[in-house]
Amino acid sequence: FVDDGGSLVLLGGTRAWGSSGIQNTPMKKILPVKSFGTMIEGRYPVALTAEGKVHPAFSGEQKYWEDVPPVLSIFPDAALSAGAESLVTANTEKGPTPMIVAQRYGQGKVVALYTDSLWRWQLDPRANENQQYQRFWEQLMVWLSPSEKEGPTQKLDIFSDKEQMYLGEKMEIS
Image (cartoon, rainbow, N blue to C red; front, top):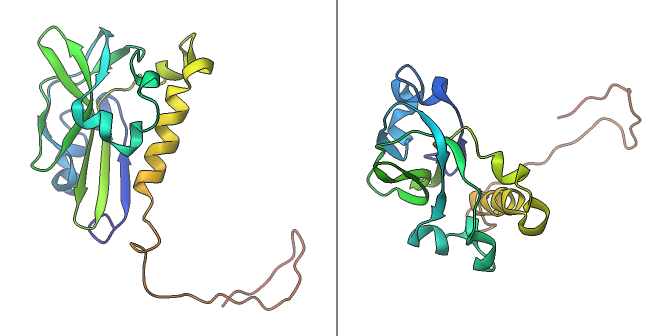
């Protein structure tokens, strides 16, 4: 799917990123991080990287991204895959560790979030003012969506057996 131009967002907590999670499935080859440590919990300040500051997921006025709420969990010691970019890091005792990582894979795009507490961006007291959570997801979805020229060149015609349809009515689609 991704190799052919699809986009994928990977989210998760200890089950997804743990030792028996995604990294032990065939999806391992598309992960933007080769390895990472066991989840740690605390209060970790986050910041956009140089790549994150110019990435479409964080476009617009940079003032919105100057003071991002901290997260409560992170998977430290992440080693980026070739071609992956860390867009956001969390500052741990060992230093900055990748938290939001993106990469192109084949014709598609993959983004992975190595925290299970991004929701804090939505619940921050200044959330209505900065709308970082909403901005991030909206802008990320736009980046992940293929442009018109990236889309398939085939057209698909879909027909129904009725000109007008009403809720609950059966129809045949071909």
